Length: 249
Image 1 (cartoon, one colour):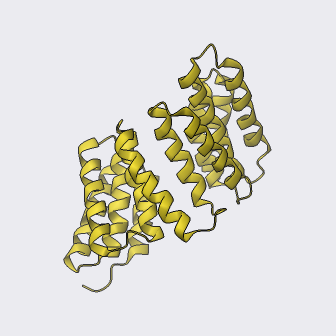
Image 2: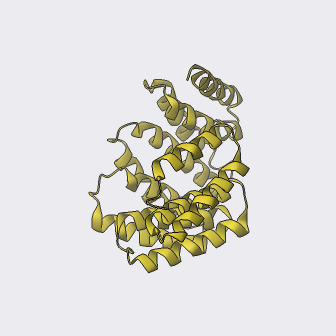
């Protein structure tokens, strides 16, 4: 066969995800990964492995996720693209897998690699730095390296404040900081700071004008965090906003 039709493959993958049909999504990715390997299409293989790593992380399939990370890192080395932006993004995906399964120590060197690659290839205000700083800070919080985490959260806010739809990422960062304060100080000692950051996030959600699919996704993602901190009415409100947007689409 010729070139892998990656756009069609990803479109079909989105269909499976829209139905929460994760079994079909996995089979779909594994089939096309096999086809990519058959014709030695390493770039397509890298794309499909990244998608698989994210899927296995989402489904809490630790063994498969870690195996996929190993395959990704091996493939980057074989391709000789260790210093490319695409490799940086892959390092972040791999690190996020490790973080998700309680392996922050293993995640941190990969975040550092991604940071090095991005700093060599991207302008300092590139939106991708926001995601990197946020995810790396989460790993640092797990390791109780709070001052380093807060520094990265502030960098994330600085980057995202000027990006398109970046205010939603700032809201996510505020919620991450609230969680970090609780981890560092305990629920009682951090109560006032948590309230401050949570209310800052609420203000962003309420004032954000572009109520599109991305807004719905972020509402859905963050609703439970508000609930965790005791903002149950607001949790239901965000769930309602997301549901109404999805129903309109």
